[in-house]
Image (cartoon, rainbow, N blue to C red):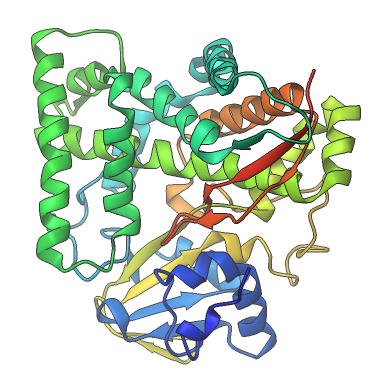
Length: 405
């Protein structure tokens, strides 16, 4: 694939994670900047933006709630319309002390005890998607592991958990695209896109109010803070968070895992020969190809290690770059399928570590297990199209089936 990094002439001073070239070349860009003595990139885009690229600095910003607010987590040309400490999508957009209260509400439905029973359903879904591929001819048949498989797994699971119609999955993917990838749009267009999402969620909430059921939406509608039901905006914001975060992040992690196996035959063979390696492989997939970059906003003018950040500047938190920092990880740029010690930051650092990590691990593990069992040998069969923006993963992933049961 042609290297198109020249679209941004200088990543150190004009960093643009929304450039189509970024996610294609992200690993090389991070290495070049760090090796060139630039641990923090800058950009005048989006009203001012910074991007720390070392594990140490990403860790520092993630834990510093004094100088950095979580009120905005997706970089765009606008700033959040709902102020701190609640923010538009609690708890991820909430600051202390409210974040802890809002986070505590969502811990029970995402605990291992609540998530583990979903494994048979996830496995059934994966097999249904693979069955839909139909009969394959080894050496000839090409499957799009992203479009035909990975993208449909988390969207179906989170729809069922929220009690939303699974047949609306294409609508959900449109919402994700608008929220995560269309960050370069004018603020008024982004607002219009979010209004469509809010309208959809409002309709689902109304149906749940009229007909309560055993799902996450009804759970939030019945939840209380200090003896009072949650504010409507809190319920809607949390649902928006679960819908957006529960789809693109895991879809991207599954797709990147399958991309790795399609381009590294030795690792695929090891996983086929020793299925128990999946426990270590999943963690290494998450480290090496972590999909999620979050963001913060600078509260007030702040000198960050000599970098003059201004109030309301964006600060990207590229957890994927932190995961590939050679100062923190041994053989950071390599994929080590049996890596035993793996303190990766794929699920974030600080107060907003991903609530859905148990679900994400389950979906990635089962999705890879079932794909590899169905297709024990496969290879890349064409150009891969990667996402744009803060979630990194393949959107088109053609693989040629080389062996089938």
